[in-house]
Amino acid sequence: MQVIEVNSKKTHKEFLNLPKKLYKNDSAWTCLLDAEIEGIFDPKQNGCFKNGDACRWIIKNNEGKIIGRIATFYDMQKANLPSHGQTTGGIGFFECTNNQAAANLLLDTGKAWLVSKGMKAMDGPINFGENYIHWGMLVDGFTHQAYGMPYNFPYYKELFENYGFKTYFEQYSYHVDLTAPFPERQEKFARYVMRKPNYKWDHLRFSNYKKYIKDIVTIYNAVWADFHEDYTPITYKEFEKVFIEVKPMLNEDFIVFAYDEDKPIGMIICFPDLNQVFKKLKNGKLNVVNKLKILYHKKHSITRSRQLLSGVIPEYQKAGIIGPLFLNMVDACKKHAVTELEMSWVGDYNETVNKMYTQLDNTTKAKTHITYRYLFDREKEFVRFTNEYATKSKR
Image 1 (cartoon, rainbow, N blue to C red):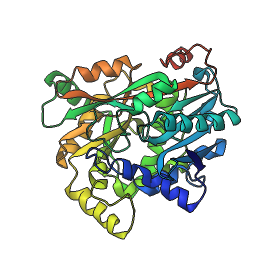
Image 2: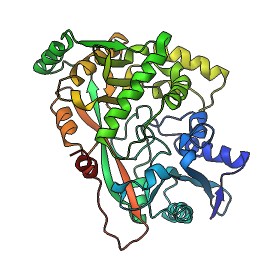
Image 3: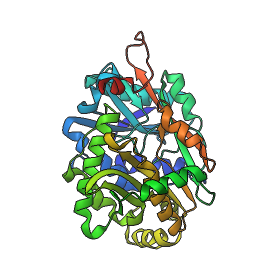
């Protein structure tokens, strides 16, 4: 077998096309847009390159047939977080035939590259960016995947665990049946809070998007700085760039804000499930025909949505704000004929949110992903993620 670095037009194409060959007979898989994947590994588009680097490889068998791929990367802002316990990089976009030797060679290659960059461990499969997309390995719930959530073959779990990866944390995706009623008591309380005169509820408006981007940045940085010590603060410029890129895929009504008078205090960002559209495209190419298909099917084919982000700033987290935000978003989804909502994934360490979701009669835990960790020092004690450091740091 031969491992080849992705550094030419040919190898880039082979890297992108491998999943299309592996999953061609799997009806649950959806082909991602080539442009989205390439953007992640473009220093001009991905800010993680400012403090890090990435490299990709493919592997071919002795007959010259491509049988696997891997990406490896690090961002020093995240690599040295205190909760890691060591400098930690990542691997992702892993695909491989059911061949342990090939998987081992790919993972060894990624490990060696990370060691050369000073890393002491690797997490995977993860994204070279934020964790709300392309993060984790699917181990349960091999049905249709919402936009941004990884899909893979069941045997990947064995490939990783045989190599020596251990579970760092589990991620649960809850599906909400929007055709079923919500618990009457919870909805009644949420609508009571919604009517309080000092609170205002609003939806994104493209005509005034700069105002809403400022509010998103304010809320995001306040929420994630308080909740998670490994968050990366976002700037207006960074988010505006992302917003412009994804604007054609957004629905204004699906993005909801909460205000106390004019102060932004909470938000929910929900996307139409673009995988329902991407399934109708050919091979992930963003050509003219496919662009027209996206515009058409966005209006006529989407019955699912995915909540990417939600949050309430710390001083309002006990004020009942999340309920009205959620109901505003759900009302908008129903207005646009959406019948199923996939919530943003919840870590197994987040007992409060997991308990809340499991108490909803119209909500089920539909999928489980795992974020794995591999310590290069095989004698070092392995510690699962609990978010305990972030909790202690706020006391």
